[in-house]
Image 1 (cartoon, rainbow, N blue to C red):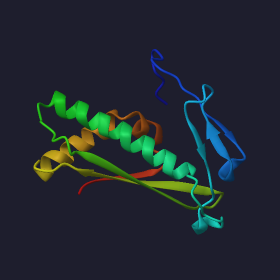
Image 2: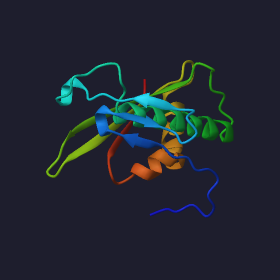
Image 3: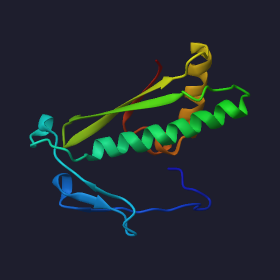
Image 4: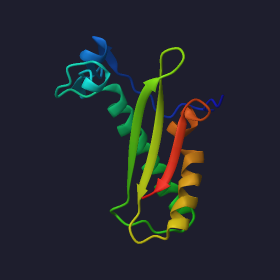
Length: 142
């Protein structure tokens, strides 16, 4: 297990009501209603869900790691560069598990270069480090 030598930033969120409740930050700057997707037996609706929140965080964090390794490797990424994180939920022997697919859109950059950068970003991204060995994460240049 990797543990930071020094904590640079901390944040917190509080959940009320579980999957059909809400999440909020202590300072009130972020509040989001949650709803259970129809696919897992809920009513659906306009609320978000934990998988969407995880996907949003992973995509943003991974894109930052990709930009870092590209900059360090002297590779110029276009402004349109994007990461899509697809988070899937399914049953396992006891409970449920997640699977993640990260797809990079990097227009105008050779696929082999993008794939190398993805591997380097995967080694650096805090979300990747947190999930490594715990869930399946696939990387692709799309």
